[in-house]
Amino acid sequence: MSTPREQVQAALAVINVVRDAIREAGPEGIASGPLYAMLMEFGCSLKTYEAIIGILIEAGVITRSNNLLTWKGGN
Image (cartoon, rainbow, N blue to C red; front, top):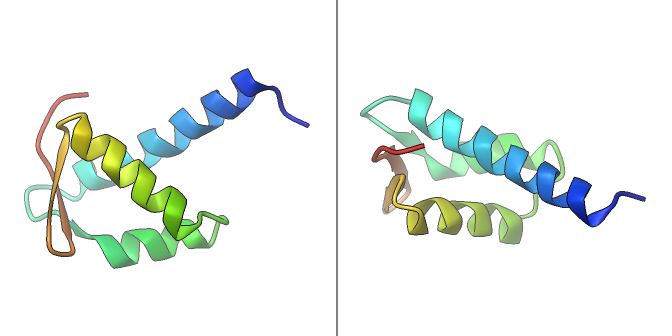
């Protein structure tokens, strides 16, 4: 069983992977559906995925327009 610290570190790692995928998609952005489908293969639920996207939007580093996620900037 993992400790709370390990759980936080794992959550941050997943958020960073999603952030990096959106950033690396370039100015055209990436469709949310295919990105979620990739994460589903690793057991990511839709609720968790939406929470990650929400965190990144609230942080001001991505935008979402319909199904398109676009890098806005920042870390």
